[in-house]
Length: 346
Image (tube, rainbow, N blue to C red; front, side, top):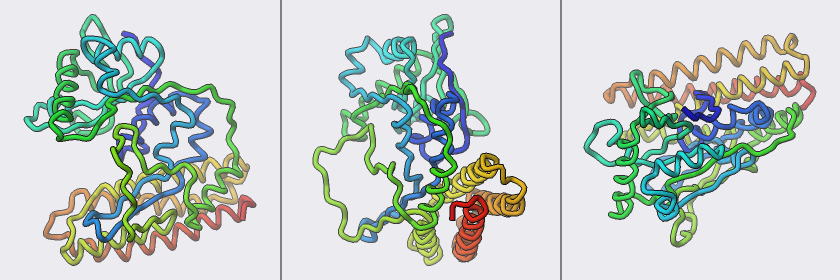
């Protein structure tokens, strides 16, 4: 069975558009130094007039394009590649490309609705007529390797196309091909320290991209005049605002934001641990790392409470959550400043 080297990472799974490419990035040692210098900065947007809740993500969730060659294909290009999407998958995997493919996820899960989601395809088996993908699935439903038959995946792709044709989805480019770029990159403690400083100061990340690769708008609408764009620790203000609306009953709790916040703390912990090791300062930073590890644990426990929160307790938990977020921000700021001072970057 032809399979490409793939690392099923679970460090960042909040949004598939950023999570799936990391499974390609982290499969290659040459890309890891770049990875450890990134995924520090947070970015949030909120427009009170839009009626939508604040959106939170890593500033460089699309930054993988610096270490992966990326090519997007529209529906016509996929159709021209062969009678079914499987022909394209087999051809591109043989040429060393992973493929992120949008399909009707509900069909693959045996549900009657049509909902488009992407999977990362990395292998195929002609004998069993199956493809190997990365996505959410199984019991428990976690990020993992899954297998789908050629027929099921082809049907799911066709139903996704039908949803687009009927105006029920705006996915115009259903496939993104990914292949590692040749890299000559070594880890730089100074670059990581700068990223941490930018996070503390709220300096926007240079890799932030508000666009998408799968949908190109027909006309570029101007940003709302009341659009708020925050970076770094300022993003806590948007999270607190969301919890305030949950408290007063004007919004339902959106768990995804806090899942990502928890993933961010885990990412930061791994990076400052790596920074301490790279600077041979693990011993002087022992207490700081221990305290940040405890902070990471607290945020993870908060996330889990929200995940299993009964609706009737939302207002009470939101009240506690606002105070908790402020303590997290204060503690995190102090610990990261300590890290930068001890390593000589502040």
